[in-house]
Image (cartoon, rainbow, N blue to C red):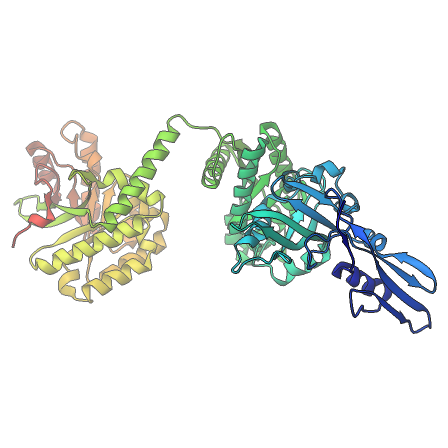
Length: 635
C-alpha cells in the first residue's frame, strides 16, 4: 500500500494560475470568488505512489515520496480536473530509478514527446537514443553531475538540475526534432552515488529558437548558425561513445567548399562569406532529424550521421553533393554557384576517437579532391599508415621532451672558399639528442614537426642557441636554416631583434637560409621577410636551389646574397655533364644579380676541380669539413 499525501504541487499551482487566472496563495486548499461573481474552490485529492506508478510529479515537492498529486477546481458548480488540463499541455513528468535505469512516466508522456510507444522511453538508455548526439554529454553532466554539487543533499529535497537539449521522437534518423527543457532533482546515497531523479520535461521550441538568436556564439558559429568547432567535436565524441555502446554504426563526413578561394579573390571575402552561409543552409536542409552539422574551419563543415553504415554514408554524401551543385546562390554581387568535395569515415569501425574520425575524414577528403572536384571518397586504411602514424606520435613526443629538457644540439659544418678552402662561415645543423646519448638528424624529425605545428618552437630554440654562439664567439659567422613557415611568423622576427638587441655586430655575422619551397608558397610574404632581415643587418641565402620551381623573375625580386645549389646537381657532377650546364647558367645569372654561389654535397677532389673551373664561389660537404659539436668550438 502506498503512502497517502495531501497538498498541491507547484505544477498544479502554475497550471491553475495559467488556466484560471488567479494565483494560489497556498498549496493547502483555496476558496475565492472571481470578478464575475462565480465561486472558485480548489481542494487537494488524496493520491498514492503505488509500485512506482506515476501520474504527476513535482520535482520541487518537499517530500520525495509524494509522486501523485491531483486537484479538482470547482467554478460555478462545474468541476475541472487540473491533471487532465496539464496532460493536454506540452509538459510531462517522470521518475527515473538510476539503479535499475527504469523510468516511470506521466500518462501523457508518449503524446507530449511524440514517440511511437512507451517502450522507446522506458529506460534511461532507450531515452538517450533519442537525444541529439551533441547534447548527450550536456544532459548527462547536468543530471548526474548534480550529485557533485557543493553541500550535502537534503533527504527531502534532493539536488536541483536544469538542462535543455534536442530530442528526436523518431530516433536520430528521423526527420523531426524537438527542443526540451528538463528540470528536476537528483537524490543520492551517503556516498554521493545517484539513486533516482524526478523531473518535468516541457517542449520549448520557441524559447530555444529565441535563445539561439540571443546567444548564438555559445554553441554556434556566428556566420553560418551551425555548431561551432568545439560543439562539433563534442558531437563526434558523443556519437562515438554511443556507437561503441549500442553497436550501431555511425559516420562522419568532412565537407569542403571547392571554389571559395576563386570567389574570394574575384568578389571579395564578404561575398565568400555569403557563399559559405548559403552552403551551410543547403547542407542543413538535407540532414535527417537526428544528424548534426557544424563548421570545422573556414571552408569546411563536419556532418555527424547517426545509425549509418557504409552504403548509407555514400547515399547521404551523394545527397549533399547534388543539393549544393543544384543550388543557385543569390549574393549581393551576383548569382553564383558552389561545389563541394566530401570525405567520409565510419564510426567506430574505422575510428574510435574524435582525433581519428577527423584525421581519417580529412585524409578521405584529400583523396576526393585528388580525383576531381565535386565528388565523395570514403576513408580507406593505407598500408603501413598505422605504423607511420605511431612513429610520428613518438617523434612528436620526443621533440617536445627534447625542447623542454634542452636536448637540442647544434652541429657546425664549415662552408669554405672554393679557391683557398678558407672557412667563410659555418652552417648550424640541428640534432636531437636522445636519452641514450645518440643523436637524430633534423631530416628525421623536422618534417613531422612541421606537419604537427611544432616547427615554430624548434625555430625559436635554434635561433636562441645560434645568437648565444655569436655572442660568445665574436669571430664566428653562422648560417641558420628556418622552416617554410617562418617567413609568415612575425614573432620570430621580433625574437631575432630582441635576442640581438639590434646590434649589427651580431646580425652582420648571421646568414638566414630559406628554402625554395617557402619562397614559392608566398612570394610577396617572402620578399617582406627578406627585406626585414636585410634591414636588421643579416645576409640571406636560398637553400637547395634547383629542387623547386623558383623562377629567375622571383630570384630577381628577392634581395638575396647567395644561392646554394641543390646537392642533387653536385653529387654526380663528374658523371653527369648536363648538371654542369645548369650550374654554369645559374652561376652566370647569380653573378649578374650580385649573388654568390655555394655548391652543396661536395664529396671529392674531382668535383672541387670542376666547380672551381665553373666559377663557383663556395663549397660545402664532408670533403670540405665534417660537422662538429658547437660546444667544442674554442676561440
